[in-house]
Image (cartoon, rainbow, N blue to C red):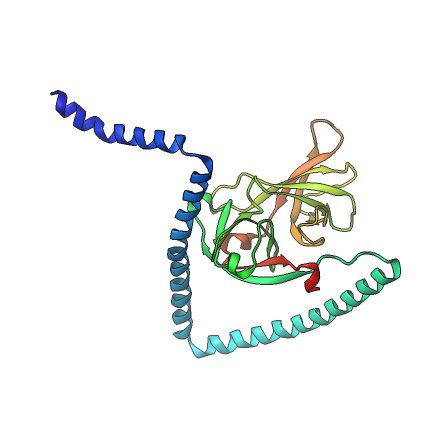
Length: 278
């Protein structure tokens, strides 16, 4: 009877010994083991992402010609609109340079745009983290901003050889210095507790008392540029609700984020250039 009980308890004893050994290991060895395990997993995640891209390619190949022609027309209209925006952007850059020279201001930090495909997104952490297919080999650094056409995606929290981990703007661990559009007073944004596949939300704090927002009249929330990480003017979301905080000095509220954050397949990392590269 005793040997049988011992056989039943053997898996639990083995697990207990392994946990004890892990707890006694030095922190440096734990970090090395974790990084090594991530690097071993990275090729499988990247390979799965490449297979998905190949599936999408062949799915597009079998689409009817009429749909392809219509998509080409829509793309031509978008290209024409982007050409106009590009010209406006060049004019604004020239105006900023003129004002910097006139006021003798230091130049703003330049960034290099590094597009990256999303390699993996876990269901249990859908609104917390994602893995992209660019890493140290592509010049990605920890803390670099990540954006897409709808505004802020998040920031780089871990960098590995060929992959990087992004903490999403929807995560409670992300806090940004922000400002309400057309208002220079700084406020604070933080990600919220979002359930998987739900509409993304965040929170805003330290909003002045004279600012109002509602679902019918939302206010745009953008990055303020304070802190030197995110450039100013990047869209975070829209404030849809504000109420007076418990101390009565400011307002707090809810921020509605872009629904496209739910299905991102490609993002852009803003890699800051070195001063000698300007």
